[in-house]
Length: 334
Image (cartoon, rainbow, N blue to C red):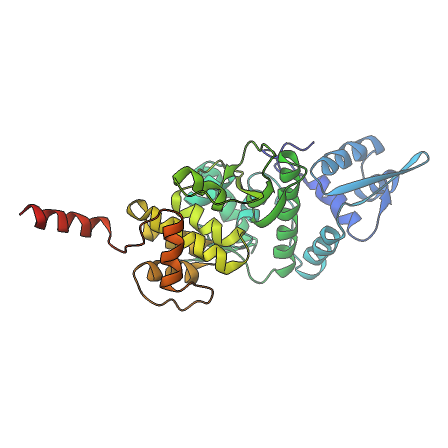
């Protein structure tokens, strides 16, 4: 089974040449060797590596082995990258260059965050991002780096491959899990409540029991990070929105949790987390609702319904915050 910590760290130019020759049709090892200009033994070893990384599948017919892309989308997107985007992939599918492309597939990050995501040194990140910018793979907006918007097939290929990697990682954790949200290097999934999952963190409604809110569910929600980042209270609230359906119930539970944890919630971090996953508007509305204001988004409960739910779970529905408490306490002592 693939070591997910190694993911795609050592794809070299010969392996890329094999991917290119297979992007048009399936071929036997001998034909691959002839196309790339290497021996059959070398071709077999390189194909095995690409097979282990999830790019290729092999089918034996008698004494011959036919090699093809494991997912037809890989072939379609790679063919688009080569023929339509017309970009040079040589020296790009190496660590950490390809890992950087993966994490930038759907977001903007500064170099420090990129280093944390792909577990690379500042020197490696500077070197690779500079190389990728010179090739036209990356763009820059202020201090943030992003994938070039002029390469749609590359973006699609990276998204498809990220999904594949996450699915492989999920199958290492559980055979019964279902991914409900994902991006490069991380995903949220649920599994049956009777299954023990390691190397993933409880999140969403499943994590709320640790904070005194017990919500009965047949599913247990987990967040898996490739970089080992630990979830914060604000992450759990946002994960509740991302993972749970129907949405109005998810909003209700997120509100309940934030009200329970109000003295420990970092509003700025909560908003930035929401922005990262494309849910900034709903997160701002969560905060507005908790201040007694009317949200602009749909799916929010009435204040009366929210108060009733708070009572059921033993949560104080008051909007009074810790600073107000301290002020009233000081005044009463005076």
